Image (cartoon, rainbow, N blue to C red; front, side, top):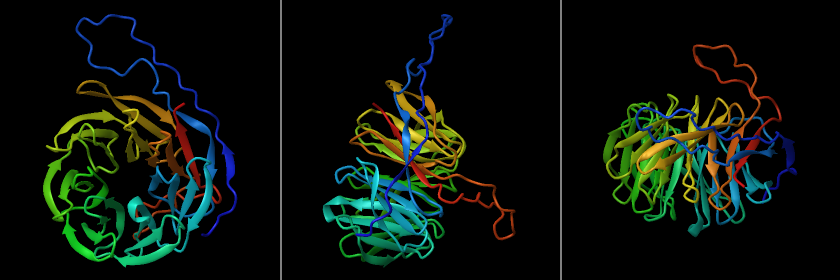
Amino acid sequence: MTTTRPVQIVTLGALLLSAAMPSLGAPAAPAPAAPPAVSSGYKLAATAISLPGDSGWDYLAVDAAGRRLYVSHGDRVAVIDADKLQPVAEIPGLTGVHGIALAPELQRGFISNGKSSTITVFDTGTNVKTGEWKSSGENPDAILYEPKTSRVFAFNGRSANATVFDAKTGNVVATLALGGKPEFATADLQGKVFVNIEDTSELAILDAAKATVLSRHALAPCEEPTGMAIDRAHGRLWISCSNQLAAVVDTTSGKVLATLPSGDGSDGAAFDPGTGYAFTSNGEGTLSVLGETSPGHFARIENLTTKKGARTLTLDEKTHRIFLSTADLGPAPAPTPETPHPRPAIKPASFTVLVVERP
């Protein structure tokens, strides 16, 4: 196990949430469904977890049973005690980390490396690397473990396909063409995998056992879908969209049931089966709290202030905590022909994981 330096606690200040006041005037016609006249109860914790390194970041993942939080960060994955909120290990020597998938029954984790088009395999008990698999596509980004088939799906952004691995052997089972750039994915645990196709604004539903595309569904008015979370009990997907919307989608029909306002720069999405709330993390520095306010009616409950750049998240179903990663950002470099839209520079020693919690 490779240990990291002790955690540094950074004071952010608690975020006070005020209750929304009800309307004073009675409407002439029945009012549409509206969110409750109270806050969701979530708040930004007064502390954050400071981690070393000045590289970029992408996905986070929680092992709720093993009580570990995994944070992607450039050339490493930080491993954090999900209860004490302290780093306990680090998986170093990676190449452009994007996502982390976990297979608790195999005591294995899988990390997608975009720059080398490889998948790093590690032991979740020791946090030691145990293997490296070559993707059959380019730039694996989102990654998913599907437990019914014991397969790993690595979604390759540059080659618009998915590499399907046997999670036990590392053998490539199939290379599945997706017809567009895949983004985040999730599974229903019954053999279906759902993945956003960002550049075509579609949802693709996959058969995990057959490694085939079962159907494709337009997500309009949702544009460039990114994050995805699933409410398995009610058969719904919660999808974050790049045009400041979140879409609620039926997992059987692929039909868009509702679209809700979210925030600018939305990327990640999460759903908490314990509270019934869904979330999108928005790069503008907000967290959208979404919910079903009455049967078949959905609304944004509120937007919590987080921190600029905090656009990826994960949720711990045991504690209902939400973790978001970000850093202090400086000005963006001047555009070049090779990089017409450069990202802002990351200020040294500023990378942190924010904690949103509900008492």
